[in-house]
Image (cartoon, rainbow over all chains, first blue to last red; front, side, top):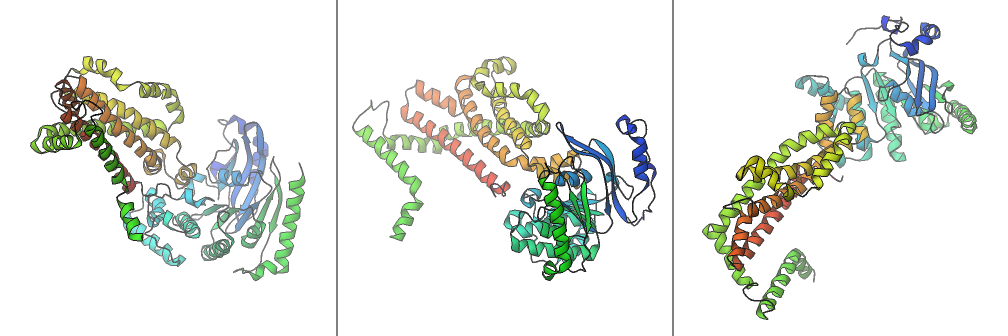
Length: 290
Length: 255
């Protein structure tokens, strides 16, 4: 668990063997692209191609996601924001390309995923506590160890939730909190969040945003969050990945380095306003291009 | 006023029963039908009571319960796992859908002769033909429950690292339970129908179906009506019981 990966291209990241003819055609360029990525990169996406039916959504898509940072994904409707994190997290397959986490494949990486629809993501036949236990159970963690870890997690969250209740007995914010806890209990290397606040009311969104920031500050987990709300996207993020219409490319990769913990005041600070304005401009430019 | 409302409210189902009995009694009193064909309610109730108390009807009632329970249990044990298996692969289910729908639509009574030839005139044929009918209804519902499992839940299990078997056991099975219970409720009702018909026509010496036919042939009308009521009560109890079990197990249903 504590093994440390050094930045170097591991064997499995080498150009694909002849067994994969589709990728072999572009081997030289892929190889070149694989050689370099900025320091402190956690996730590398190279030569990604994805088509739905006849529509090309991604083609030759490259991306570097920094380690230990929150990256928001923002872009026009239907540009494939969720598709991107779903491909990276392995929920949907991609046609061609390579996605590595510190040079490891997805199967070798522990990830957590928080869905937009918490009601449908939790298992209503299990109590909240058992929902949190479940991923550890899948990993084959013995019961005593599981209980120790879940207790620790609950203590660190310090939220007034009845963990013995069934999900449908909880409020929306509580359910989404359980979802986040379920994703975090395995101590993921990367946490994916697909519009985690969009099913919550504004008051709850503010609370959950704050909670998520605290989790990030305590753990420093690399997070990738899809958002359709620019305020959330900028407020939480260290980087905002702005996408174009499909075929999707990176329109801009904006940094926002306001100090943490960020508060309601952050929203009116010049830096926040400037970054948000810039993102909006890029978004409007991309959204108007048809 | 309020107390009166509550009184009327709590006995609401009884009103219908009382009205029916009243109409029946009036019809008998006015001799709308030949009193031999339409006995009085009190004579019928007396026959029901006697039959249940002195063993005749009660014994037949128990035989029917036993056959229904065995065939229903057999159907459930086979159809639930099979339904989950077929439902987990939509392509597989679609390729078998016609066969399932065809036999589901075939009146089970049309299969009596076949089952008689295959399994003889004994207990086995009755139980198997009822189990066959019930199993198809259960299978169809379980498979649909699995196929309509919520995508997000399946993805959630997968992203947490569940393999195929774990997804099947921990998610698909539970996701299909509400629909499974629809199948079980229909299945138990159908099993009862088939068992009673089988008792009528596949050489039987006991059971409510046998009692009904015998009472009819001997023109013992109160006894026949009593057997009808016993069968009705049994069907109602089975349905009510499975609803109760369903509410217990599928506590998240509709929430």
